[in-house]
Image (tube, rainbow, N blue to C red; front, top):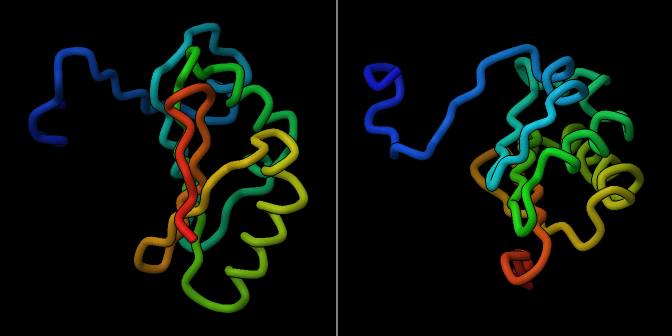
Length: 120
């Protein structure tokens, strides 16, 4: 693992499993979740369902932080992501920030003092 990812802090755990099944069945809590779930330029539909997002939210520890990556490089994908953010993601993660990064957007959500602030 350290050869593949470089140095990992002692408290960091990498989980590499079927994300849908894992999220719906996991009982553990995490301080940080980075959901990078698209295949090529498409997010499989099961990862856009409210059921999955609710389960993902349930995996966050108190004051945990979620980073949810979306493809965002052209007008088609921007519309898909903007619609998903407004109509689905915001219901489960109200007030989530969006940070654009070279063709992607990170939807960022956290509770309590760790909640990120979106830049205007």
